[in-house]
Image (cartoon, rainbow, N blue to C red):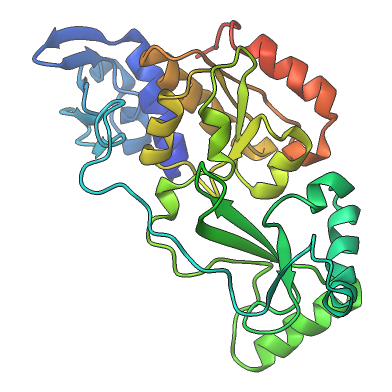
Length: 304
């Protein structure tokens, strides 16, 4: 059986819960991976070592790996992300320019169809492109904590139905790969969070850590997005937050959410997770009910 990276991380984190100190930053416990690599389960006792740095190894089945880059430590090197310019053809949806505003009416209609409220559509920086490389796409900027500088942005095509299908067919006919979401060249994406400013102010209310920008909209300003899968640098940012963290990932990623919760708790930070129904995203849930479940999760026992 081939394990996904998130599965391996989850198994390692769960094993750490029962690991006993063995000196020099190492802990030992039964290997959670031997069974997947063909080793008899009775031979896996205390064969698995996990170091405080995140390194792990089993001397029975030979599995090894690295969980993060150093528990809760600041990223090495220059971690200051570079600033970007908005893409060509970008127009804020709050623009009062009548002609350009009319051209972007489909973008507003698309956002409304996704349940984005009018006040969020007018959110500073949120815009769209009617021309250029990202024409026909909503543009969601990822800003620094001052709210003045672009660290990057996420674009999402606003087409739907037959128009979306035609665009996909045209792109594929030209030998390209059609993607609903597009990002600019962005080497530091793993060091950025959408709505990072939510981590700056002390608050007893949990901040929701989610995967995509759209996931956050019903829960702003109390939510951040990883812009994909969580990186170690992003988790380090969460560890520094003066408030609890609740992981609310897509319904099929609940094991990863549980593993991240255990990781945060092992490093002394209050954390929890909410398990969504299969194939459900956070923005499809009842915001009030999910927010209440997130608050309860912080003190709830995590089954391993």
